[in-house]
Length: 157
Length: 157
DNA sequence: TTGACTACCATGAAATCCCATGTTATCCCA
DNA sequence: TGGGATAACATGGGATTTCATGGTAGTCAA
Image 1 (spheres, protein in one colour):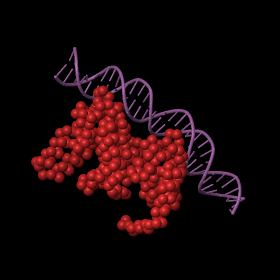
Image 2 (tube, chains in turn cyan, brown, green, orange):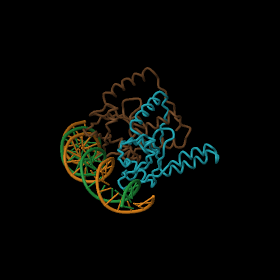
Image 3 (cartoon, chains in turn cyan, green, brown, red):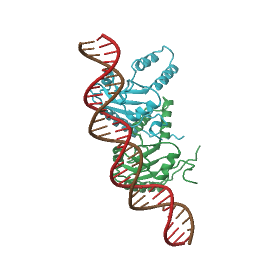
Image 4 (cartoon, chains in turn yellow, brown, orange, purple):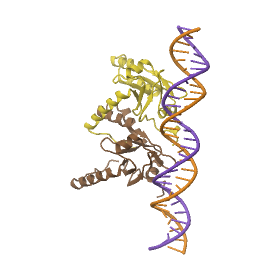
């Protein structure tokens, strides 16, 4: 299967890239390939639970909007809060011909990113972290996972 | 049954291959045939519980991502952490025209692999081990099997 | 006109591809 | 059944491409 022909939408692996003085970062080539293939835009917003940047495809944002619609009654407080946190904060980030986006001050500050950005694959989505912050978070998660039961149902077709 | 016509997805047997200076290893020909036939990619990540490399198909990873997608609440926080850890650690390993992949430093280190890699079939999945480490592990497992009696439930398909 | 933002070009490093070779396994015929 | 021919496979090395990143020019708005 050639590179331009991925069968699945899966953001995997972690990649460390540099952030220059202008706030520019290269999107890892394989992530970019996925986005281009899906013909969708990259959307980013501040995580409201962790010090990192949440990244989605435009398509997933749309799905999220529908899900929220269906989960809460219109004009409920919850819906208001959620939509406020997500959609008003989110922004599309088109990349240039070399595959870079320009992160905003708001996002960089929230994630505590200065000159290094860590891209973390989460399956359907990915996140951008300050490398040191993520290191700590990862150890914590790994510890939790080890202590609890391993109940991953192995998915087979 | 000819070579291109395996009926089942079963990784069997163990194969010892060389790892060269670039980290390249040949995937055993029969494993490769299975993957090609299923039209899926090879995905690998560090085992959580053992010093070895876990290998799956993209398809299995895709299934996992879909499950998470569809079950906001079905997955506990622990499992969410766990799957997050897996996706962020996992990486696709496409093989070149001669059937080799390039293992990363991270994976090699975790498994303690330097110049030899042992491919161990596990049915739906397989693992890659340092040969010596696996030798010890295998004796241990065999011992356990003697002492306890394993019961495999006959399966719902 | 100046400042900020965006699009394009250049370069070095790193990952990937492809050809060549030796070795092992398989096949076929005597 | 044995032994040589043939094909498949694992492995080594070099050539090529891709990618991240620094820099520059061009554009729009204030």
